[in-house]
Image (tube, rainbow, N blue to C red; front, side, top):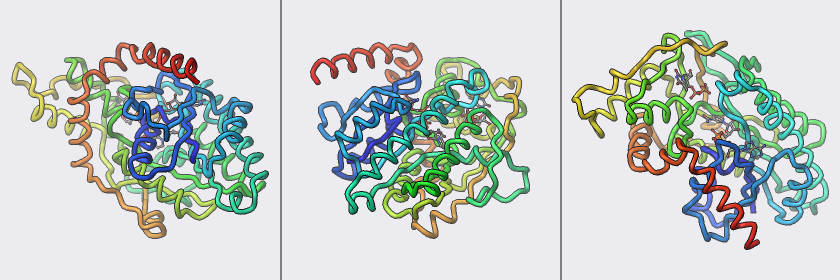
Length: 357
Ligand code: NAD
Ligand code: TYD
């Protein structure tokens, strides 16, 4: 049994689905179901006894303690977070509450649980914290990619809150000996990505005939990894990572934002051409830049490749094609997310689960 937090969000849901598809070990999935949590992502697991969903907050110490005592997981994988930079600029409070205070409370619950485990289980226990390359700050055009030794220089409320959580995880290892692992991954894309982030927003706006808003000059660089490759990296680190170590995860795919938007447009032109024969590029609109916008992220993934033998399975070309195709194949998912209808469904599902529990 493992406990996953935030497993109804984009990466967490992909992780839970892949985990249960590749091994038989059950998962307790603790998720608060914020706007970003969506049980539709996990619909294929309905009736699967290996998936135990619990709506709740990682900051609810009593709940987390109860779940740990009841299910006795051998590992915790912490995905739960507020994750969108633009939201963090407009309302940073939730980011501090979940990413900092929530991670602190989860660490404390994990520490008390771990300390009371019998020797063999104590030895095997792992706390894996899922973090981001954004904690390292921004790179100039010529600077080498971020290694694990790069100093922390977070620039947005989001990245500052994630950096704080990484420091807490590190301190709980050094001070209390909690067996922790941290992964710092580059930008993910793929199925179930909430359409407030660049790639899914461009796909759904293009199809809806809306503007494709590119911030500033569109020459900011992000390093992209297909979400399933991030999930395989986390599984590998959980299996073989050295305690207390951090691992950068990335696919060596640095791209300026405008190239990403043009690629999405080209794929849609091929797979779902506009009825007027024009390219979706006609919808690109340059808008005001994001305040404090980091210019470039790039991940040096040699440590995880060398020490743990991990490699991504997708190239950017194969991953982005799959992603665009997934959104074309799942208009009902997009519709529910955009209308907010999934919230009602979530509420009904959750109440039904409560009633039968
Ligand atoms: P997401 O916003 O799609 O999902 C976050 C999930 O956490 C949601 O299901 C939400 O309901 C849940 N959640 C939020 N607050 C909670 C709380 N207090 N208690 C329990 N659950 C809560 O985010 P994502 O893109 O899937 O990111 C998952 C993790 O990966 C985050 O920690 C993020 O920092 C990290 N990360 C994301 C990326 C990326 O490109 N998306 C890259 C590197 C690292
Ligand atoms: P985003 O997906 O929000 O991820 P992050 O900010 O965590 O990297 O944004 C990716 C890049 O795309 C970032 O440089 C901001 C830019 N961007 C746009 O140009 N337009 C948009 O509408 C969005 C959401 C992002």
